[in-house]
Length: 98
Image (cartoon, rainbow, N blue to C red; front, side, top):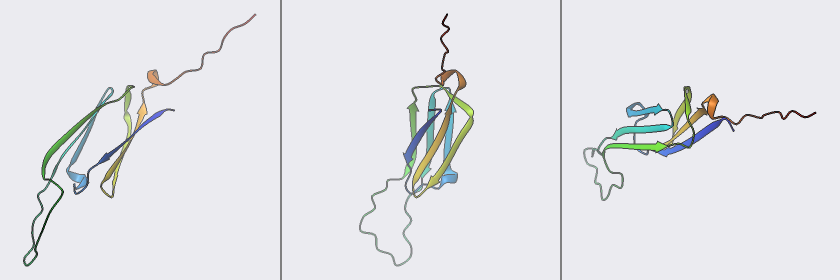
C-alpha cells in the first residue's frame, strides 16, 4: 500500500558497478557488464551474456520519497523498495454526518 517494488535482472554485473537514481516518479538503473575474459587453457564454446554499458528507465505510477529507498542485489536480481511520497499515499477521509 505504501511502497512500490521493482525487480531488475542484472546477471553478471558487479553490484558496485550499478548506479541507481530516482527523481519524482522515474527510476534509472545503469551500469556496465564487463566482457568475459578467458583464462589460460580454457576453451569457450559460447557465451550468452553480452557486455557493455546499459541503462533502463522506468516511469512509476506515483511519486516516490527519495529519502526512503532500499536496494539490494542477490543472484543477479536487483530488488528495489521505494516508499511512496506522502502526497501519493491513499488517505481515508471521514465523512461528517448529522
